[in-house]
Image (tube, rainbow, N blue to C red; front, top):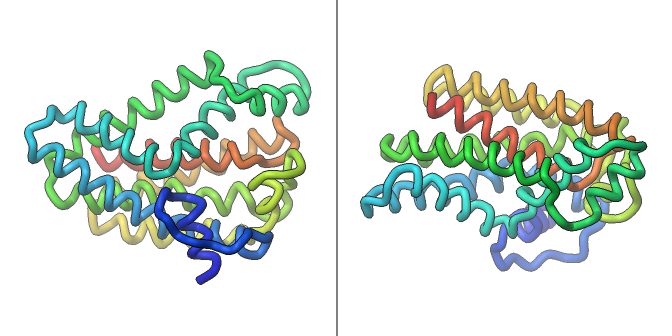
Length: 244
């Protein structure tokens, strides 16, 4: 329960009191992350349906729902996506890429990546807006899938790229089978929404595996920014599959 409280306080804006994090609590929080994602996704699905019921145009409703998710997570994952894109887009050794990521501003690679990934999420949500309560389940599944990738990025054998921060706290703490177990469970649950939902979960998993492999080489390890990046990319992949 300590890990769940930490997951809620870290990954959402909910006013949950949690003790000062240590490596054990942080590692447990990553394993709870998909459940927290499902909670956020269900809330976002409710926002999407509410906007649609008010007659808000579908694409506008999708964009506002993406904004809701960003606010509900303090923009942490969106910031990680932009920083990771800028780090991957620069030249030089890992130290140079990490310095770019620490800069705080969004460069051209980060801006374009945000436009494409968040735009894809919004367009997919716009399509789901007309599906009634199915939209709530679909968005919950997509958000859970996005956060299931956390445990793969922090799997054993991948060191922290730099000292300090969430990345250093959770790096190398997760057995590989935790992510595999979450992806399998989510794909099975997705079958209730149709085979494309299960395919979306597996596509998201493949993207996470590929990005984690590339970033661990480029940055000489993992960072907290990569956690945010895999979340946004995997969520987008799952939403697009669900909306297709």
